[in-house]
Length: 335
Image 1: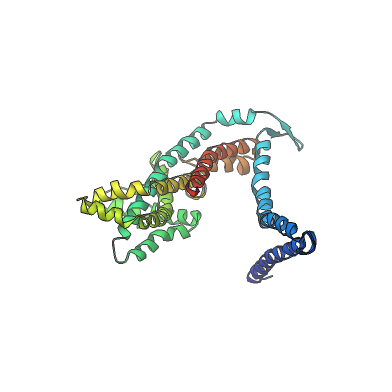
Image 2: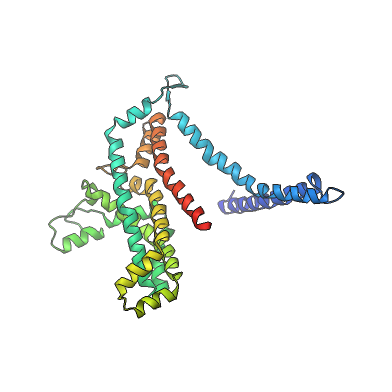
């Protein structure tokens, strides 16, 4: 079957299935289970009204249970198991966690993740806030916003390929196609550098890719928050003699602090799960290993799904407090 036709059939079946589910489930509820007729019509309508929201939630609950809850429980179980020769598995308790903690690669990955957590959210949020402020002050601001937001439409692997060309290295007797090496040689460098193999600094070259992607996201959210600031407070500050820096840091930023925190934590969650960029550009070599790539290596290269599952649980434990905190703040703002 032609892929386009297959995609069209999938859309028709998917959308038609959703419409059919909601239509027939409501018919079953209103016509069969709780019909709005007879002496109990009022009570039946109330009962149908109580059950109807669950009809809409049911597909999502099933999907979340199947694709989220079950994998978490199964991964936790697998982190306490070990494969045995001849097939099957056996319970080994915390041995997988002990083995993981004894490996230098795990601590390298954890250290690098901490570096990513410190640098990427800070720079992405700062550049996004700067772009949001500056683009609102120029005539062609919407065009500038579109260009800055454009990397968000690129997959992480696509962005990694683009930036790998930026860092590309050719022999000294050949023309450099890598932008960074071209600039380096143009400003007096003696020989092209293999940037992605330079220990410690290569992590920052990888982080630049994610900052480039996430700056557009931060800009859009923070731009909306800046536009939501009441004009009265800005006009009052100007009348009181506030200069542009005081206006931005003492008037605007305090009023959008909650939005800044949301953007920061959202990017933090992305950073904790970063995998594609490292996998496509260095594959965790030369001191660039991160937790998600470490987990991938254990699961699919070493075929050690015990330690791989243990590392997956570590990532989940690191992400969970941030998710809980985000949900808590969202509910507090809705009150």
